[in-house]
Length: 422
Image: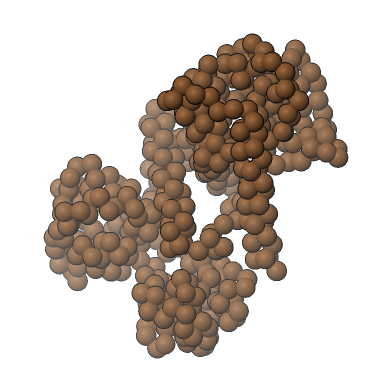
């Protein structure tokens, strides 16, 4: 719809508007032509598309490009109109994601852990905060002069970055102390994924053990709790990471308190990335409260929530490109997407995940790869800046290369998911 609407506004012919894909051998399940556009439902449920006249796209319909350009064709329109048409899809995906986040906040509110719940064990911090004077187990009570009454990494980040705050007050060993940040602290904060910045301190209880990874291979199961690494105690989850980094690529003995209450030892080899292939349980330890939103309050909060999610995804992709995050452990296909949804039906989780997927789709589609919207946008920006249009022949070749690149990426991602299953 994001491409369809501006195309119609600029009097560009839309030949097809499809939910799902009408690829051979079965083509469309339902179709009806209204005016110049064929509306239909395809048999392959992997998205949808619009086919716009006079545009080199993944359909690779080269015949229409051989004749002279017609007034109703995409290629006849001014560059700025073509740019708006191409940006329409990702724009709608961004707006839809933020709208859904706003509706989730309006309907269910936002759950949070009050810092008062953490008075016994305190908080866990990212290495950046540890280098700036925080200690594991500290409890933040003020950031600058502003009370810090909930475990909210975004609130901490905004207060420091936007207000120029250089100090925080923490409770350490029962006494209040002031932590002073370095001059470049605020500049480094955006590089940290918000969920890793600060969190409630919890024990290392296994929630998931990935098949084929060291932990699952050693027989570690959901509900088991890691209590030591080579006889070094692990009381909290945050104590495991530095030990895992210390023993990268080495065989270690993990002390395990099993779900049945038995204490056993398991031997495994920690990966070169310092991981063992598990997900930790993070919920259920603390009483949560709920912040409610009016409809007017929900919209700006939804935009902020969507933008925060987007920036975290960009940082995660950046870490994968740099090699700091394993691609094979963090890339997935439709199987991984399916696992994002809760096994028990929950409307809040359903709409939250749908909002997240909409924003991820917008981000992925905006990548400067030919055959994606971002590839077309890149060429159109070049045309707007230089006044020189990229030839149709070049676009055909670029789209062909981009198409096979995307297919290869999809096969790779699907292969990783299948490999994880077996």
